[in-house]
Length: 611
Image (cartoon, rainbow, N blue to C red):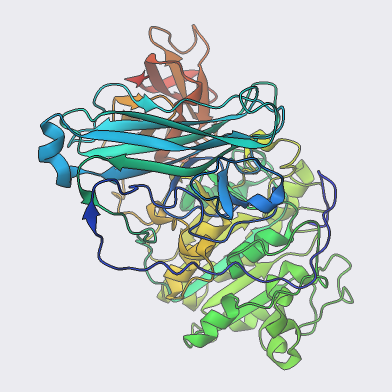
């Protein structure tokens, strides 16, 4: 946790101010032609980040890939078009390689005019990049019928190359206009931030994105994503350290308990951290922001805004942080444990707790206190943050190494089993979230997206068992899910507009309806750059941590030809999403494969990628 693996250390900010939630008027939408139908196409709906390494939520958009973020223009000297007036922010690829986001606009109110064949659209925006880097932004619109199926080819805005912007930090205006296809009922706008093959980082940007029609349609209103997270009596959160998804998931030799949790609950397969190094990831959950810039740790972080503890107390709920090796309540030194670090319990970074010793002492405890608190549901806090010391959280033994996994696995089994046996778990609604702060080396491999595992398990069967989700989530999503589970408000736009982890709680049959493995796709044609999503299920005999779904060119088969792209599916059932940016338009086939691809379980599933 206390390492800075990559770029030069930034200047320390000693007093932090949180990014506030934007106030968006909720007036009834007006209806007129020429209105921009894209919400937050300029990245101004929330506070931007002045830190290239930080991830933020971009309100109004659904993330399909990576970690696109709203970045302040103050990060560099950029040339922009003269109109419209430049704001404070632009939308960037984010710090972890290729990314993509989308919005789908309902235009069914204008169906009569559209079907008359006289309605036109204009898709426009500023597209930019950084110096000589070849990364570029691609913006397209796909016109969908009443069944959500594409009508013809997608319309694509012209891109901006490095040479067109004279190899400088610049944005150029781009647009495309045409007649809407008859039958259009919705329009999917897809923004892809794409890297050139020789670049390690993605330096592509967009601003002032706009979609307008020539016929009257309702103006959009920014709203937070819908939540289907159920209410819980207790939420337990555990954050381990510096371990990549692929290091822990599937390693049943070194990490049998952690993998058993993934099989018992829901595994998030598209989850990432929001920063590097560590502490900002902790703060993202407890305060809705990365807050600080660079490798700064306790006692040099002083967050003056509200935190999760404040929100819990405001609604009459109890909370505690349990830190291995803390010894006496609110001890901030390693007097009792040489590997103890106070900021493993992130509440200590908030001044209304760190500067109030009596308050701190009734909320931050050694993990030994947990045994007493679990004796009854009444003494078990509504929210508990559990933290191993710097050895047992996996950092000191080697950041995701075999030894690191073994010590993490042993500590988690010893610590979590008493929770599973407690009255709070057996008689009330309790939720466990197990996550990691960041991958073992996110800056060395940015294209991997700071990919970490996150597992949800609950006590009353509300979490899908053995389920794998490929939805793009991060620590802001976990913060929002905890807020929804315990009835708490959001802190900033980052958590307010983050997608809650809804599909972990979606209804699902207790047992597969089929006695054989299955692989299906909800749609058979997708525009290039969009996601193709497959639902899969296995049986008890064919479920394996080394199963995967592979995509093959039409006519190719597993064993005779190599897959074009593939992803592991280590859970018994779930969904897996493939971004089709790397797939040329044409026909493809998908298979569900067993035990590292040696046997076909299900398939073929045929689909096509359209231009």
